[in-house]
Length: 361
Image (tube, rainbow, N blue to C red):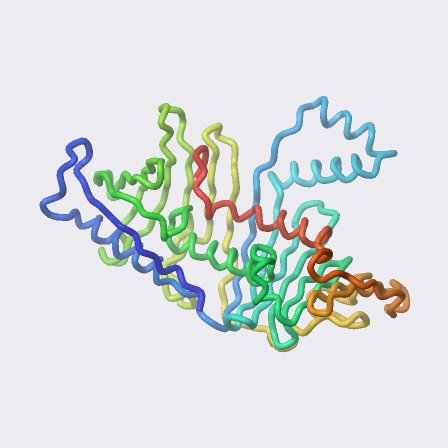
């Protein structure tokens, strides 16, 4: 089972005095319970979760935009970059959608779809009775034992679904760092029906604004500020639209927005669907046939197949969908990663909320 269990050491001091509380603050007790619940969270079986992600982009100068516009008609790379810029500027960032259909460990499918311009229309991953596979419009990669190949750690399909599950855990915890990190509670101050908790986490300090709900039995984190040592503007993260989920069995924030100290949006998560499993996982995790029709992506369009277990690569004719060539591969040297591996890294990068960054939440 996927779990967020950890060993978090919580030390409580009076701010500025360095003296332990003689009697713990009621909010501190709720905070401990909240973290315990987040640590114990396990994604239930037979559910589906959909998550939209918007990542802020580097703003181009007028000169850079004008150069891309001029080069686009004759330069394919410039055309792609220009179209990507226009699409992302309209959306407010780089947008992606992740749809997870989860039965249990070893039986799931994760669909990843760019919502703004991309040369790659989708990258899907699945694990089932046919083994593990990664599918794009150009290529299919398969393996019967991928989940056991340690040298592929970070690229294996289950590593991607782990990241999505951990992101759901972030929305449950209301803190944008792994719950297994040690931290100290430095002070708690009550303000207008809410409380501010000053934390030391790693090398940084964070101020959490929390709210007590459920008749005083539960706590929700509303705001997280990454306090800068030089006194500069803090990075800010806000957890919005909290609700109790019968499916997950815990409170969960539906939206998380983080802002850089500069005031620019860094990323926004929107957990827009949590429900009971509505698909037949035995069907949607079946390895896509060259002449088959996928329930989500339609007729197969990939033109090459990389079989990691067999150590070979099959090229397909795009018209007949038949094999045109079989290329032997050294299973230890050429794992056929150039295309899908790069795309996987791009999608993995959007889950940077799992790592503490000094300049942002």
